[in-house]
Length: 164
Image 1 (cartoon, rainbow, N blue to C red):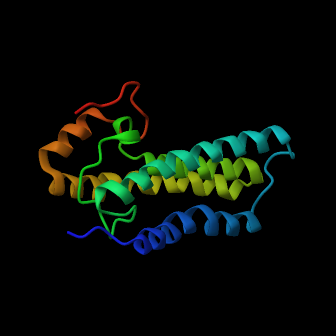
Image 2 (image 1 turned 180 degrees about the vertical axis):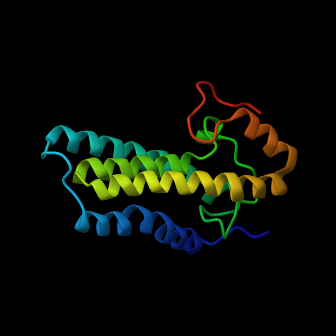
C-alpha cells in the first residue's frame, strides 16, 4: 500500500489534534475558567508540561509519517507495527503527549473547562483503545501485536525499553 501524502498527514494533524488541543480548549476557556487565583507558578508549570507534551506527541507523529505508512488518524492506519522510539515505553505516546498538552493548557489558562475536557478526553480514548483500536491492531498485526501489548503498558511508561 502507498504511504499517505504529506497533505494527508497535515490534514489529519489539523483535524484531530487541532480540534482537540486548540478549538475545544479555546471554546471551553471562553465559557469556564479561573478556578484558582492567578499564579505565575501555575503558568510556568503549565508551559513546561505543554512543551513536554508537544515533544512527546511530535516524535510518534514523525515516526508514523516517515516509517509506518500511515497517519495519526484511525482512517489512515499504519501499515507497520511501530515498536521503536517512544513506543518502546508506552503503546500510546501520541495520546499521552496530547494529554500533557491539554493539562498544560488548563494550568496556563487557569481553565476548569479545559481540565474537565482533559479528563473526558482520557476516558474516551481509553474506551476507544480497549474496544476499537486494540482489537483492530490484533487483527492487523496478530501475534506480534499481542506480544507487544502484553509487554508494553497502554498509558504509564515502562522503566526500560521494550526490545521485542
